[in-house]
Length: 198
Image (cartoon, rainbow, N blue to C red; front, side, top):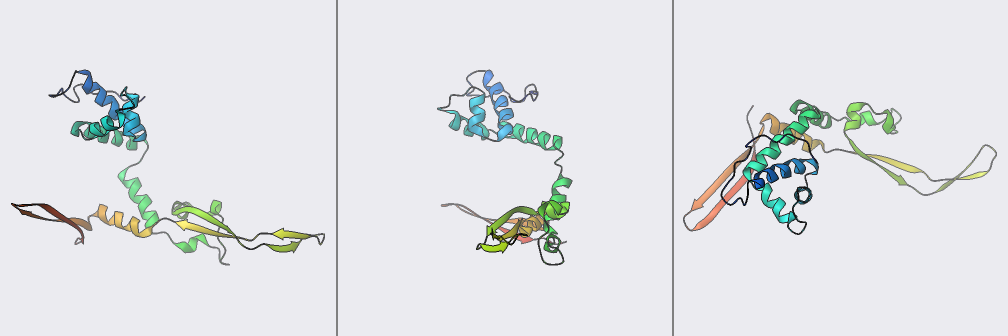
């Protein structure tokens, strides 16, 4: 279980709480939840019955004070791991500025993945190796040797998605909300993306 210190009076007792320990239980739930982001398992780890852990975990996640504490713990986690806003922006920038030419040699063959520079390697999501039709070659003694040619492909991360996230961070893309309200109809909300001005 997590050893995060529990702030005193983080959440006051509210109407409907069966006992004062409910408050501490929610705090412990929040601390367990940030370990693996699994509400059901987190509820079970603080003592909730497996039969009701799913609904209890979901209900506690809807609690505003629990959500705020989870956000605070998440912030502490990312700071401890060195995941700052600047770090995220730099990673997105590397993906958005990825140059496919850096993955190839001058003769048109792929650079081995272990030889890629750091920026290029960060943009590679994986490698696909396809075995083509089998051929036959001979070794140094003239003996036939079966050969299976392999085609290698790099799968790169989405540059457009990275650019869009960077634009949102910079404020170039904003959300426009249109709401229409009438006395006899439900609220209708339409959200569209709009390019902001520099």
